[in-house]
Length: 154
Image (cartoon, rainbow, N blue to C red; front, side):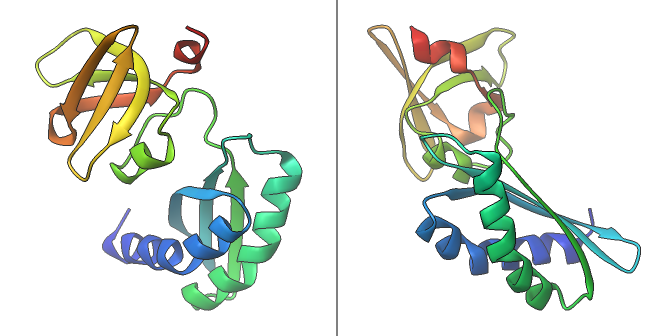
């Protein structure tokens, strides 16, 4: 993805985040790609209660004119989806959104995943709770992280 798309992703996120939050959701990810004659936009939304097909449709209907205006392109194809149950975390801002959810972390220098409930976040780190144990990870020390719904039943 080129710089132009990254800049457009940031513009879409900045413009649409409050609107989507007002609808009861968080934007987890806003990603764009160039397509024939326009752009393809992928928006991932989340709500603690879950995200239905109707929710995706309502967000799509609300965001379409905004994204068309922001992109300046006539042809804009937009997909709105939920993050799924085992989403790979792609940006530190996502940890705040998924606070209270099950998470698996692969730390730098480790071959073992650490699993638990995402208990808290700061601008630079997160706290994972597993049983009676609490571990803190700096974002810079996390090689991979993904949602893990199996931790939520423990």
